[in-house]
Length: 217
Image 1 (tube, rainbow, N blue to C red):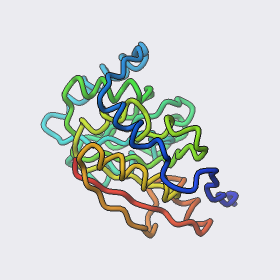
Image 2 (image 1 turned 90 degrees about the horizontal axis):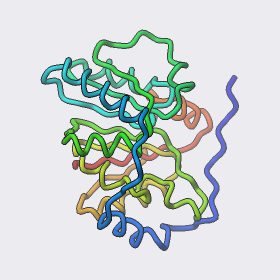
Image 3 (image 1 turned 90 degrees about the vertical axis):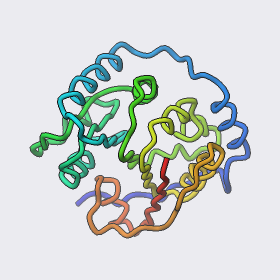
Image 4 (image 1 turned 120 degrees about the horizontal axis):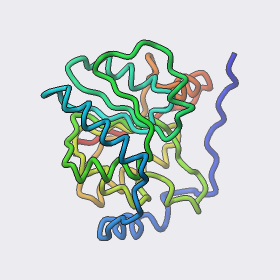
């Protein structure tokens, strides 16, 4: 039996004191970090695959890990094209279930992929951020999605955004970052009857609350 998951611990008691300054700085500035060649190649593959999908609306599953969530999302939305992206080829290689025809799994750096998708004027139907990855130390605000320079590019893709995490403070910060970009969102606890990711299943077994944030971009 899998070990239970530990609760998130942090030296940060409330929303980070530098959140607003950080979010607004990234909103006003251009993220100019060079884009890696392997991310360009992955995006070109995604572009070709997307063209083959015709007029299907696009769903994006960020940090999809082993790809379980991407597969389940694709099965639940057969009329949509689903792309799952993760930076780890090792994790992506662990999903051995048959992939639906409307699913593509890719290895790429999302800091690159988001900017390439924005520049190509992608528009999403749905955007899932299910990998918890809260970086709980106060010094790591810039490693959380809402504190990262790529955050404006993420939001530029539009669609119905859904974020899930077991750290409520992470979701509260994300919610405030959305507000600073002019978007309202809803945040509420959720029950897990059919977990999309191995993380959600583990949190549920551990008795931890999962929080769901949703926003229309």
